[in-house]
Structure formats: C-alpha cells, structure tokens
Length: 219
Image 1 (cartoon, rainbow, N blue to C red):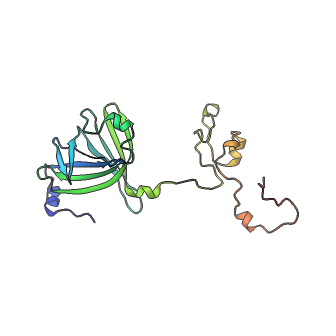
Image 2 (cartoon, helix red, strand yellow):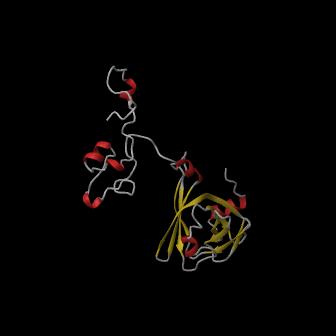
Image 3 (spheres, rainbow, N blue to C red):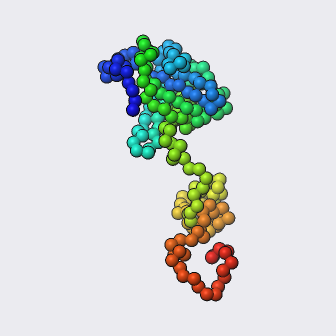
C-alpha cells in the first residue's frame, strides 16, 4: 500500500501549484540519473534531478489483476539534461533501465510520494521530441521465453522467419496452418510450427497391426 505523508496528501488534494514530477532512472550499468519537469534542479530521495524542457507524463494504463501496466512520458530534447543525449540513447544505455516516477513539492522536496515503478520498454524520437514507453514490473511475467510447441506456425507472414516475399502475394493472409503454408505459399521449408504433433485423435487411437512403426512422420 502506498504511504502518502498527510501534508503531501493535503497539497495534492488542494491542487497546490508547487507540485511537480520527478523521474529517477537507474541504467543497467548502475549509473543513476534524475530528471524533473520543474524549471530548477531538485534533489529527490538522494538523487539530483535535472530539469528537462516540456517533459510530462502521458497516457497510463492500469495494473488491475495481473496486467503489466504501462506509462508514456514525452518531452523535448531541445535542452538535454545530463546523460540524456542522442549518443547515450543510440548506445542503448537506457534500454530496460529502471524508472521511478515521483510527485514532489518543489518548495519542500522532502514532501514526496512515489507514484509508479517500471522499466523502459522503448525510446522513440520524432524531430526534437522524445517519447519514453515504460512497462510495469508484472511485464516480466508476460514476456515469452523460448518457443511454444504447437501445430500452427508462430511466424508472422512476410517476416524474416517466414521468408515469404509479400510482393509476390499482395493482400495475402495466412491462417498459420501447414496446408496453407505449402499449398498457398509453397513455403513449407520455413514453416515454424509442428504439424505432426499428435492430437486427441492420436491419443484415442487403438494399436493397429501392420503398417510402418518406425517413429517417423505420419505424413
């Protein structure tokens, strides 16, 4: 449960004009940086937070149940704060960095409450604007590791694993079945499913005399 100091809660409730946001970023290399949408440097929970022009919290999706939750931050890079440079971003120094979002009273920085914790999912630059996409800690439980074995192909039509040239199949769709891959696209060599996995019919089948019983594909 989030603990909010009574005085801080009162100022939030009243909409005090002295409230601002601060972000503390901990990169994978251990470097810790801080940023704020206030126009002056603040120290929040032991971290010096530098002002970033026009940076603000955007759309947030909740974390009900086991949903991972997400948050978007956006702002201008016209006045780059310490460490938040094109070179550092291009080098991947902020990939998967831990981010803490705080609500702070800049007139009394010790009055603060941590609103959200997550990690950087992606950084997108458009002109001079930077958009940071964050995901909550439960996202780690939603991340696929390895492959799922099933009859259907798990590649996306036209991607590098599929290999189909979409210029030869304009407007085509794929239902992920082996028959479609071989019959429509002649692409069986790149099929990323396991069409010979036994189904319920195999489990219910009774032993049969004769035929081939050497463990090879039933095709």
